[in-house]
Length: 270
Image (cartoon, rainbow, N blue to C red; front, side, top):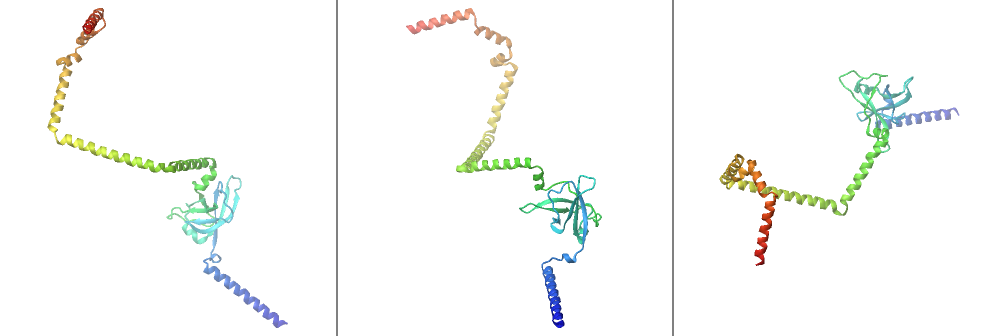
């Protein structure tokens, strides 16, 4: 009996050691060396945690270095204390002026703590140290805080989609682009013709153009000085008054008009 019990105990111990060895081997091969790491606890005081939960991941530059240990209310303050259990070796990468923020990952919107490293030249964070929260929030955090305003953004996007669908329907966009292309070609051709015309005007008869402009300028100078009939009419107000009296309404003019009209009618009658 005693020998059987001894054999059973030996077998049990052997199996236990074998299972333990297998478990350790699996953990080592799988890269999970958590049993061989030491951890420290750091804290942060935040006004709100945006749905962060106990056990959420703590990340540094995209690498998981720990988890959220506890979330509790601060004594006498309208704030929350965030306790984080992180790898002690990671403290060498976390300066005291580093900040943290709550971010969202995955399609399900899982929350996690993201540590933003500060100046590496400064002192390092120590065990039981505090990290300041970052003032900026991630995109999903902004959406959660301003749901009503974010809804307007989605409404605008929906209306934009409808507009694009309407433009693309029945080949409208293709026709619009074709018209734009044709108009651009016409403008290009018109610009080319205008440029050629200007080159011809400048290159073929520059002397004639200059002579014409000189004569035109001379005429305008004479008119401005009051020379000639046109200059006198423009610059002499007395001529304007005389012309106005000559063709203005008067009994003599009316009489002359009736006489002339009667003479013309008699001539036509003959």
